[in-house]
Length: 320
Picture (spheres, rainbow, N blue to C red):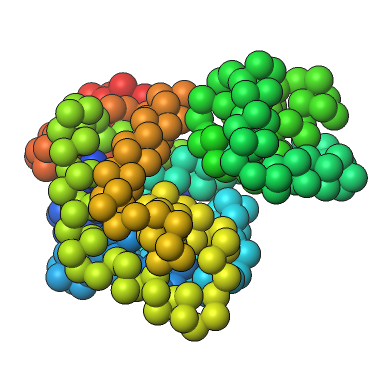
């Protein structure tokens, strides 16, 4: 299919909403390949806890941006956008359709709209804030509450145990007197890097909660704790950014004797449900997202809409 060069399909939504399976089906129908937008699946060795798709699950569909960097390597939204740009160009060059799939909201924003470059930084202020955050969970929780007073919209999107984003948001407010969410909104008004048919998968909250619980149980049964033990045994630091992600942080605590085995599953499920809530909140705040039930992507009507969109022949059957 001849596609317009700056048009991409994006399948997003909260964790465990079935994004990969739906994207694989769509890729098979449209002659596409997947480009992952997952901030954990980019790391090598984080397989079980990231729900990294297996060859059997992909059913012959190519999936880019899995296993991109080592566990101790730096990776962020800007690097993701650069990697994704190359993958999209490669997929198109081979006459395939690029389908971006994942739940990393900031990564998707960086890819579609780019990242704001005008928000200032101050190394001394950031060092001071980082020192506060390093004092422990209580200090970080207090900083998250402070952020909630000056930027409640952004605070609602990030976890209380996310020192990188909390520190950055407080730094921006201290330097500019303006909320980071306001900077993001202003940036969102600029011309996008890609025009996207951006679909958010809408799964009822009780159903999503059940899926999260079942998936967590299966991951643990398949040896998630052993995966983490092997990583730490090879000398990787327990507090690497990659190992502070939802689920992995709890398994690391178990391996280090900081969390009882009886509490592990429930703790991961609770953290993952909270994470899914934040993802949903983030995507609800993004412009141009069309929310659909996952099964709607399997219809002939959606496939036709996607084809029209990619060719630049809008059929106007979906709101954007």
